[in-house]
Image (tube, rainbow, N blue to C red):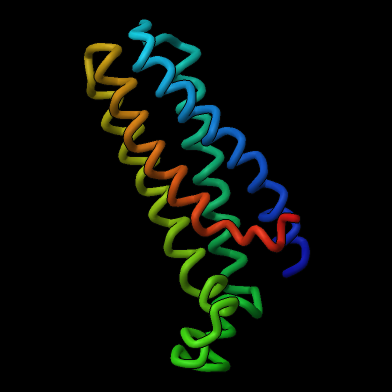
Length: 146
């Protein structure tokens, strides 16, 4: 079960990264070009929200079944995990920062729906999705990807 969930989580992450980059660039382009917010923009931002939430659910399951997640903290203790940079990345930093990423995407998506003007919608999405993207990029375990 662990290897299957890890496989899904790892490969779904490529889709998440692609869609969040696309949604962020779309929001920035829409804001700076001052174009009208349309159905395509709505779908792109919604799809980013959906794929990140699915990834969060997969990641939470993985956190509880993985020997690198909660089991590592239980077996080694929090002090030992915090002293080891790799263990800390998998057990603490990656999960917490990715949860923050999903929170920023959710807040940005929710706030943009309340804006009436296109510029406000794009600005809100651009700010929150950019922060989320930066956070996401900061804690991806790149050594596992390449």
